Image (cartoon, rainbow, N blue to C red):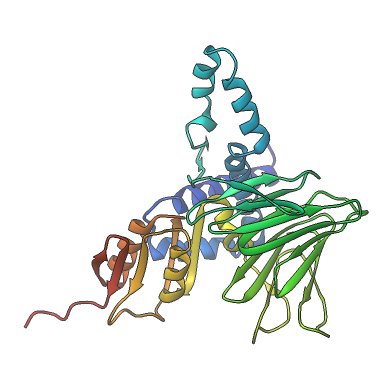
Length: 332
């Protein structure tokens, strides 16, 4: 093995180690700063993204529609198949490869008919992956709704709410268009993320090219390159900006990364995935910047990290609500 191969192997081992550490419920700010410093090296960043893509693919495998269909069909046969399927890794709800651990997120899909196509819905805390008729795949995030209508001349999808990651099958004869209210996203063969939040539309491109056209009359269209992000909405600056793909698409692997995020924003993001909500009470430093890596749905882990790291007090105000408050005044 030559020096170049040894360096590549070392970077891959380090990337796997970082992914394993970030998958832990407890990670220090020092470790997170060390991780971001390590990722500043373009070769390290590429190695980490390869490892994370592999991990995400492993996680998606257990929720692949074809895989689930095969499991359902096999279970309807002879009883001994059930014992065999029970022993397979994806039946246990987690996949592991060396130091790679796929975070467990609940995968639930509600498929309901609607006039002129199909409708896919996830509830709070649920995610799912859908394979479309053309071979494209869509991963729906928590509390999302997507309508799909394919025709001979085009593929039209409407993201009514929430967030979705699209892996588009190439078909130049049938444009792939996602309508997200404030903007339309047009792609021919690419991978990109679209989120509707607070009246805005956010688009992040992982591969290929997409054209983003704001709904406003006369607004110019923008063509994104891989690694770019754009937000369309009232008061939003209409220009692409660089995106950290590992952070922007972490949810597809059941993770949330915060890098110098205001506490209020981090709480809002964690709350997206849970019916049990975190609220900020008196004295909570809403604008204080925090860093962290958490599993989606891990309210207890986030509350513990915030209370310990920022010195906050915790109070359960109801069955479905936890309040973070400012630190208690020292005793007299």
